[in-house]
Amino acid sequence: MDGEQRFRDHQLMTPSDLEDDTADATFDRSVVFETSGTTGEAKRVPYTSRDLVRQALLGEDAYELLGLTDDDAILNLGAPEPHISGLLLEIAAMEAGVSTYNRSLADYERVIEAGHAEEITVVIGQPLFVRSLADELTTEERSAMDVFPNVEKVISTGANLLPRVEDELRRLWGADTIQEAYASTEFGCIAVRPNMDDRYIPMTDYHEFELLPRNGDGGAESLVNIEDLEEPTTGSLVISTRDREAYSFDRYEIGDGARVVPTDDGPRLEILGRTDDAVQFGAIVLYEGEVVSALEATYGEEIQNWRAVVDVNDVGEPGVTVYVTGDVENRSEQFRDALVEQSSAVSTVDDFGIIDHIDVSVVDSLADCEWADDDFEPRPLSAAKTLFREE
Image 1: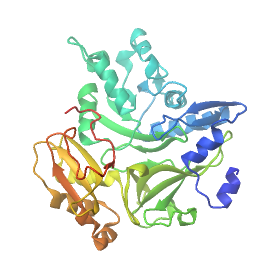
Image 2: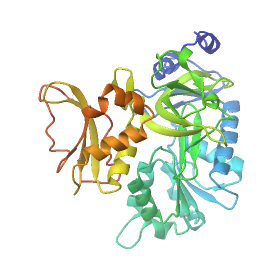
Image 3: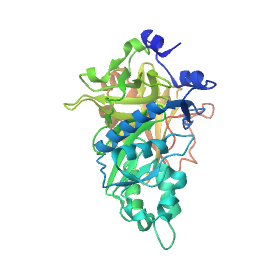
Image 4: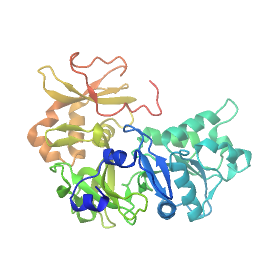
C-alpha cells in the first residue's frame, strides 16, 4: 500500500511497516542509511539528494534555535555511515556557517591532528559517545578539557538526560550549557531543547505532529494534531513527512510516548520514553518519563540507580515496583503522590485505584535483587539508569 492510500485509509504506519517496505527494496538516486537497531533489527531509510538538502535546512534551523552561530565550531560525534547522524550534523553545520573539521565520531582525531582542537566550542553526539570520548582522552596528565579547552556547550542527540548525567557532561567537558536535540534516522531533527528547564520545541515547519492519546482506542481516527490541543495531553507521538522523494512517512508511530503542552508560543513536548517500555493497566498507560519525573521529585539526586519492573504482589495482583539503590529511605507514599501529580491521567489512575499497586523498594544492589515471584519473570519498565554510573 502506498503512502497516500495509507493516509487516506487512516492507518498508522509502524517501524515494522518501514522494515517490510525497505528491507529488500531498490531505491534509485538514493543513499540508504540504517537505523541503530535499538528497537529490533536495523531498518533501511533512503534519502535522495533533495531529501538531504531539506535535512541541511532543517539542521540549520535547529542550530539557530540552539543558539549556534558562525563563531562556533563543533566536534561532530555523530555515528558514521551506514548511520546518518554524523552526516546530518556535518551538512547542517555547513548550511549554518558553523565550522566543522570532522565527519563523525570515527574521525575525531583529525580535529586534534590538524590543530583545530582549541577552536571547538560545541560537542554534539549521543551521551554514551560523548562520555566515551572524554574517558578515552583522559590520562594521568590530561583531561578532555585540556585537549578541547574552549568547549562552552554539549548538545545531546538523545532525550531526557537525567540531572546527574547533565552534571557529568559538564564536569567532563567543562561546558556551561547542556542542550538536547531529539532526532531519528527517519526524520532527522524532530525537536530541540535549548534550555533543560523547558520543554522541547517541535520542528513543525518540517514535520507534521499528531498524538494518539493515551486513552484512545488505538486507531488513527483518534489522532489529533498537536496544534489543535487546548490542554496538556499524553499519548504516542505520530509524525508525517509526506514531501520526501525517496520514501514518505505517513502517520508514522515513532514509538515514543509524549506529553504535549499548549503554550502561547505553540505546542511544546515532553518526551516520556519508549512506548515498548510503558506499562499498561487496561486502558491506562504509565510511561517511563513519568516515573523519572516522580523519582526526581521524591529523591532529587540522592538515588544512585533504579529499575522499575512489572511484577506481582503477595496475592498475585500485577503492579509496578520501583527498585532504587542509594543511602535513602523508602518514600513510597511520597513517590505515589509525585507520580499522580506528574501523570496527565491523574484522575483515571486514581479512580481505578492503580496507584495503590505502585511501590518503591530500597535495595543494596539491583544485581542482587530477588523479584517478588520466582514463577513470574518481571518485565523491565526500562533499562536501569546507569548510563554514566557504576554501582
